Length: 144
Length: 144
DNA sequence: TCACGTTGCGTAATGTCATAACGTCACCCC
DNA sequence: GGGGTGACGTTATGACATTACGCAACGTGA
Image (cartoon, rainbow over all chains, first blue to last red; front, side):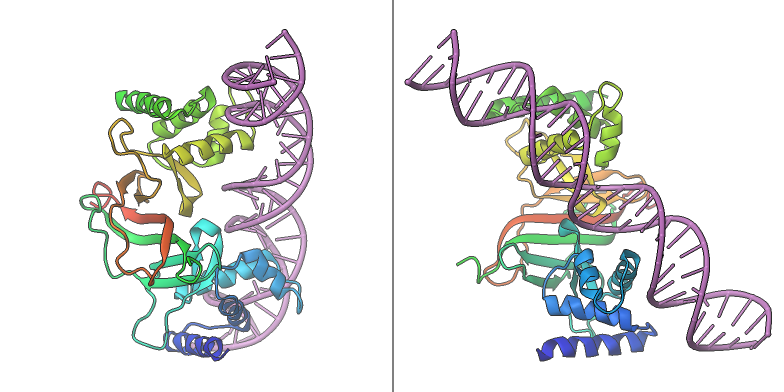
């Protein structure tokens, strides 16, 4: 799958440009997320990392923390899982950290939109710093 | 606070009308959520229930499951916490289960809007069954 | 009236998700 | 070459949630 390689290369460039260090461990975790193509649990990543050095929880959580801070991955709150950011990080469209996720409960696929719109019906004067928006249902393939 | 009592009475009527049984345990948990006026952790509810019979996790989780299914409470996914549904359940505006939450990170207050709008930018043909929408930031009082 | 299914809750144990606290190593930089 | 910093290993623990089993209360229909 060349798209996966492309995404990793893009991530590499993305980090270099910003002085972030995409270490082997972080790159490996991102690679696993990209390969999965959907939400992955932290402990599943942990298992996947094992063959080649016994990894402990903090290792993978630190990597996930870096990736989510950098905008290269998102946490799926309602699943306690993590997914690679689908955005091309090689364009001038860096991920802001507030993505709108569409999660298919049948095939596990995740589609991602970046929120351009602010909620029109926010309480008077409420200042939003972070949003969690996750839609669950069925993608077009599974709905039929 | 008479609003709390009003909310519990409304919940009582809401359940009666629908053949749901708001048992003492469920009522007590809802009461604690209403009193808190913001997100509460399951284990905090558990502690609050203790004096008067040692409660175990399943007890409170069962009550929360009932309340969320009935639409009387919501889970705040990003906090692993629960909050009473602010909607008046005595009007013809039953909670659909998909609320949009505005959570103040300073004072912990939660404001709630019901989503009337569907996302305009959903993937082609995606059928949404459930949405999680949580905005974090500062309410108008804390922002100043 | 009694057998039977259903519902709600008690209880013990366990599973799952995440972090704290500490040490070490490599690197950079003056 | 001392000192700060960042990344990661390691051990232990904390925080959140569920499984599995049992029993009592209640309603229903034979």
